Image (tube, rainbow over all chains, first blue to last red; front, side, top):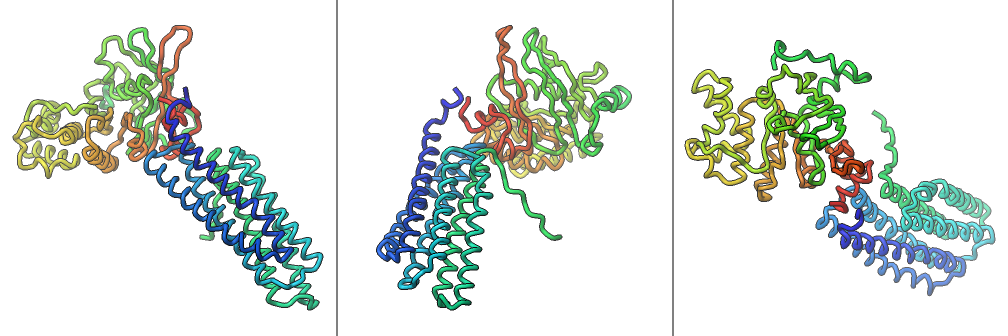
Length: 225
Length: 286
C-alpha cells in the first residue's frame, strides 16, 4: 500500500536517477581511455574525448531541467526532496568531471612529442586507475543508495591525493635534473591536478548520496569570530 | 481562571524532571499521555506534546487520525459532545485544563477557535466582533467597544475592506472575508491561543494566502495551533508539525489515532524520523 500512490512521480524520479547513472557511466569509461591516450600520445582519441563532452553537457542540462520540472510540479518532500536535491548536485559534479577529462585531453595535445620517463608513466597510470575506481564507487553508491560505500570514499581518495603529491615531487626533481622542460612540466602538473579533482568530485558525490539516503550533512567548520 | 478558582501551577509539572525553566515558561500546553474517548470508543491514544508560545504548530494526518479531537481538547470543545472524555494530563500554562474547578467558558475565551467553514452570526459586521466583549463585559463603554472592534478587524487584516460598512450584514462578505471576520471575532475576546480547524479548506488560493499571511503576523502575539489537510500549507506556515495517524486495535477491532512524530517543520518535511511520516508527507500513503 505504501508504494501505491504517486507512482508516475516515482517513475519520473527513477528516470532522473537512471539518466545520471548513464551519464556517469560515460564519464567513468572515458577516464581509462583518456589515460591511455595520454600515455600513447593518441591525438585522435583526445579529440574524440573533447567532442564527446558536448553529449555529456547536453545530458546534464536535460537532467537539470527535469529536476526543476519535478520540483515545480510535484513539490517533493522528505526522501523524495532529498533525492531530487542530491540529483541536482550530483549531476553538476559529473558534468564537471567530464570537463576535467576534456582538460586532460587538451593538455595531452600540448605534451605532444614529449617522452615521459617510466616512473612518470607509472604514476600517471596509477592516477588514472585510482580516479576511475573512485568515480565508479561513487556512482555505484548512488545507484544502490549505499551510504556506507559513499562514506568510505573520503578515505579511498587519500590514495589519489598521495599519488598527486608524488607526481608533483617527480616533476620537480625531473626539472631539477633537467630531464624535462618547464612547459611540459607545467602541463603534467595540471594533468595530475585534474585527476586529483575528479577524485574530489567523487567524494562530493558520496556526500550527496549520504544526504539522500539518511539526511547526513557534512559538519560545518568552526570559523574564527 | 483566576488563581482563586484554579489549581496552582507547579504541582503537576514538578514531576517532570530535567526541564529547563526557560523552556517551561514558553510551553503553553503540556500534554502527557492524553487519550480521548467517545463513549467506550477510544479515539486517540497516549498523545504527548509541548506546544510552544508564539509558534504555529500544525497537526497533519489522514482523516480519522484524531488530530481534530486533540485540537478540541485544547479548549474543552469535546465537553459539548455527549460521552466524550479525556484522560491523561493537559496543562495550560501549568494549570490542569480538566480540573473540576476550571470554568470551560473561561477556557474558551482564553483559547479561541476558528472553524473549517466560516460561521459568522447573522448580524452586522460590528455586532459579530462586539459579541464576545459584550457578553464578557470586558469593555466599559461604547468608545472602548469600538476600539476593540477596530483593533480586532485590523489585526485580522479586514479593517480596510469593511470600515465603511460596519453596519452591513456579515453574511454579505466573501468566504475569505468571513473567515477573517471569524478570526477577528476570536481575537476580540483577547485570547492567548488560536485553534484553527482547517481554516482555509473552503477558501480559494488568494483568500488562503491572505489567511496564511495573517497567521504569520498573528504569531507575534498569539500561539496558534492549526489542523490542516494541506501539507504544503503546514510546511509554509508552521514552526512545528505533529503527524498523527490511525492504528487498528486488533483485539477490539477499532481504529484509534496516535501521534507518530512531532518535530520542527523543516525536519518533518525534509528528513522525518519515522517511516510512516515519510510515506505520508511524500504522498505515498493516503
